Image 1 (spheres, rainbow over the protein chains, first blue to last red):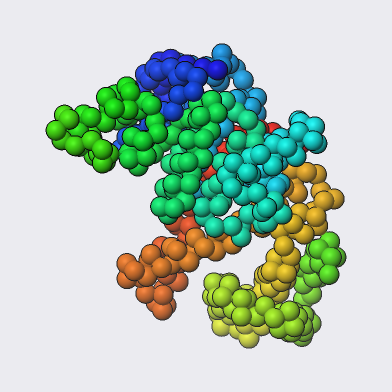
Image 2 (tube, rainbow over the protein chains, first blue to last red; image 1 turned 135 degrees about the vertical axis):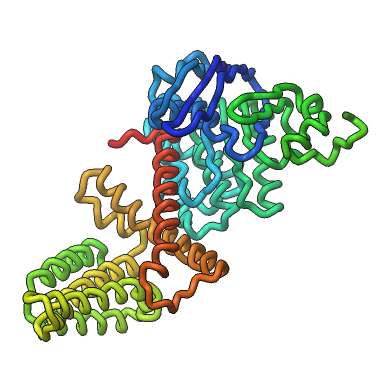
Length: 248
Length: 189
């Protein structure tokens, strides 16, 4: 499993969102994606599973290959087996009537036993086992976001993209989600996480991409990128606590 | 009561209400449905939701009173306005009673005679109602904090600052829901 992004550019009808982006992701990498609001992070995330250009129309050029599959030539439903996408707001992502149904949603083509096993495992990883029959709307915000993660990992994708999954959560739930992602990465999943909490990325990510105005302006190992304190300050990115000015 | 029976009752009440042209009959249906709301003990919840629609009804009555042909003040227009408003209120209250007393799971079961995609769409629409209600409360509080006077007589001045962001938020949220479904392999059945 590998991800290749080549000369990717995308424009919405009224805005240029991505400008000639190229990078590769190798097996088992944990990537952090940071940058100011409106720099194109979410658009890039939507390109990863083919929602752009298949469902969201605009001017698209370049290509994204997911395990050799070109996102332009494959349906989102096909790519969903390889790429899982978790959005920011869990309320608008959950659409089933029970926790169990929500997790089962993406598993239609499997046998009954396999579905049962996958649901049990996914809910166990996120700590929601025992709540299978619960109505999702009765869960706390943290539990809802964990349910979204469980729904994605149940489909067993090799590549998980998360768009600020902890932005609406309290500290305890944020930590819990971070631990789940760390566990998934250890199991060999590629993680690409859009996150403003650079402390978390400094701790878990092995590579960080910094975006500004639709471009990737820095791509390197976490330590190398976050030690450029003055550069981060200039962009308005929070400097992780472990890096002080003496390192610049 | 089974959700499907409730759904059938809802359809019958809504359809009948639109065929009744007699003021006494419409008022009787309206009063009957109010009694049902009290029996179901959901009246306090109803009062929270009914305010905006009541304002629209008052507006309809005033409009009809002064624009019923010939265009001048008329008692016939006033009564016609009352009939239309009561029809609207009966419809609103009947839907409210149905949604308030039916869980999302029962709702989906009630729609099981429909094609899967249509049933899912209807269930989603009903499921999003509490979310939209929360959005309304949040927007109202935000506008209150910015000094919006809800007691103002100017309806447009009061409701525009709520409806515009609500519309935007709801469209954005629905789009997000659709993308989330598609991301997880949904392609209809």
